[in-house]
Amino acid sequence: MIIRLPRRAAQPFSGILEIHQLVCLPPNNINRDDHGIPKVALFGGVRRGRISSQALRAQTRRAMMNLGLIPKSEYGQRTKRLVDAVCEQLGDLNRSADAVTCALAALGYSLERNKKTGEVKLGALLFIGPDELTLLASAVRAHHTELLTYYDNVVKPAPQDKPIKRKPGRAAPDTSAADATLEHAFPDLPRADSWKGFAKDHKAAYATLQQAIGKTKAPDVALFGRFVAHAPDKSIDGALYTGHALTIDATTAQNDFFSALDDRQADDSNGSAHIDTQTFQSGVFYRYDAVDLASLHRNTCQDDQYTADLLASFIHATVTTLPSGKQRSFGAYAMPSTVLLVFKPHAQQTSLMNAFETPVTRNLRDNRNISEEGATLLLAQYRREQQMYDMNAQAFVLDGTGAAIPAGVTALPNLDTLILTALQAAVKPQ
Image (cartoon, rainbow, N blue to C red; front, side, top):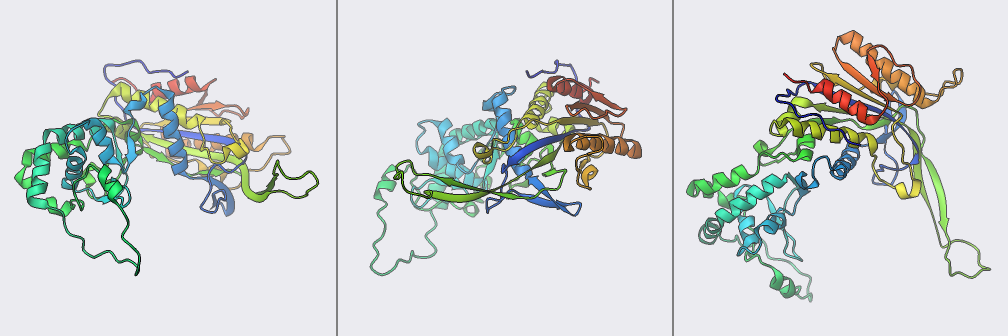
């Protein structure tokens, strides 16, 4: 169950909300490198299992979409196929793809055409909100004639710099079938540097196009941010900080040898049809996220209830999901044994990974496992930093290990109550 915060007349958003988690994973390979080996890192002088922040954030984003607290249609798209996305909204507008291509060139975006299919794509991924897509489509529709006329009369396609070289005896590829299906009339793409005069000659059109991309309420863009190399003013600093998850105990990668049999081979034949190995590891992972509440509120256009809903959705998603790598082979699904939410009204965000600089081992004397030892160390590290630096923080914990809860930390019985209580502390009426 997801709990909404009550709507309030005024809700200032400031400070940092941190999410600290401990989750014990059985043998797994949920995040692997280019050789198929589980990712690792050295910490405290020993090898630790690692899950990259990119993998964690990607899975959290997908989980947020499925929760439904914020409609999926309000989330952004990370794509190179912006021409196609805008054309979907333009419908049967004449030469719509050409007009969109011109608009993007005028805005300075690098473009590339697939030589086989003729599809036009951006040179780099762009994270764009649905509201921006709608505005861009409206701007292209409104200035459709100006864009195409400027191209036809001023820009004109640039000739190929170099002839295409082919081996002797090799015929030119037949592109007639692809050409027949292309809407694009341009033999070459319009270059961004050819459009410098468009802003001067068509000020109103250029201003409308410029304003289309810049601000968005898309929840994932608000959280994760975006970078636009050629237009820094279109970049958005995300409100979320995510650490790479590391195991609190030392880990060693192991290899699993497996084989597969051919169901149709003769009964008296020996051997398998396929043999291979796959690498796995296990351990108790520490995960850390921090949300800059003021940045999040600003990125959502200062919509109080929307920001509160987004926070609740994010916390629920990041606590209940893991990357999906090789899960069909290992089934390493697990929920966190400890979740600590910390609200800091003024202090700097701080990972508590230093609590595990010395790898955690089982406490045989007190018969405590690594998860319980880790929870005890995590809470002690928080309490220590709170006292040393007078952070004036509020902490709320959901713990299933039985670890002792120190003074200044409020224990709560379930995830929904944890989220609601933490958000009520972090989001106070003026």
